[in-house]
Image (cartoon, rainbow, N blue to C red):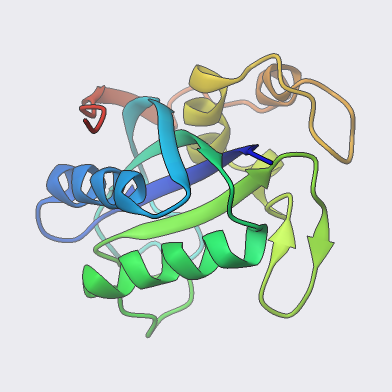
Length: 168
């Protein structure tokens, strides 16, 4: 059975756009994954640890036959191929791939939380996600993602910075 899943992409090291594009291309190359769409790219200030460069962020929609844990493992392998370092919590990274949603699955394990636990609080996640699925209900709240986004005050937090090329 295939599920609709959404992945957030972020980068603030090196050629940020190239890392996002490579991450999207690598997602499409995963067995059991078909990239359906990609959001606009947004430039955003860092959150949490702020002494670092601005990020480029985007989101991708996928059709996948992978279960959530297998998809997460694939995302982590892609990050590792792009030399992702985890030295500072919320610190700089070449490529960050976060599993936001996987169908209507919910999970709370030491390695996986679905839906992503902070997605409703972050403009840099919800803006690109709403490019793809503003009318999708959040699995826990039942409210549309677009309604959650409108609840945030995202003025002056995002700047559109182009688009990624869909793989294939």
